[in-house]
Length: 165
Image (cartoon, rainbow, N blue to C red; front, side):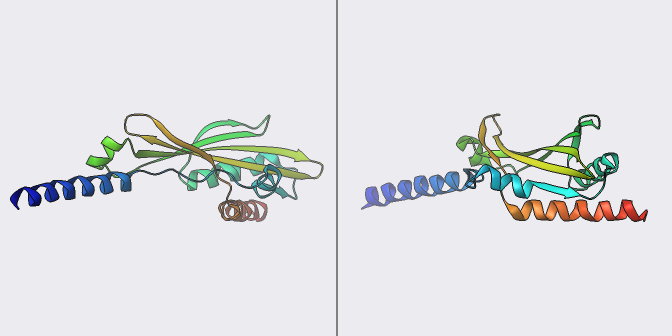
C-alpha cells in the first residue's frame, strides 16, 4: 500500500511539473491568415497633404508614444524603422521549457508622396525569444484593429500639426 501511495505521489509531482512547464510555453501569435492585399489595405492610410516631413514627424511621435525606439529615420526615401521589447516575468520551470521570455516588435514605415497626398504603410512583426536566445516564433501582425488604433493616433497627430495646436 505504501508503494502505491509513493508511486502515485511521484506521478502527481511529475504531472504537475509538466502542466506548469507547458503553461509557460507559447506558440506565439498565429500566422497571417488573410490575403496579402487585404493586409496591405489596413496597413496603409492616405493623408491629404504633400508635407511628408510633417507626416514623418507625427509617425516618429506616435511610435515613441507607443514605446518604440527609433532605429532608422530617412526622410529622403520615407523610411522609419523602430523596435519595442518587453520581457516576461522570470519563471524557474520556463527556463527548462525554453519558453518565451522576450517579445520584440519590429516596425517599418514607408511614407510616400502620392500626387497631392501622402501614403503611409506600416508593417509590424512580432518575435518571441527564449531566455537561451532561441527564436520561438516570428509573426506579422495582421489584426485590423491594431492598425485602426495606430492610425487613429496618427490622424490625431496630423490634425494637431495642421492646426498648430
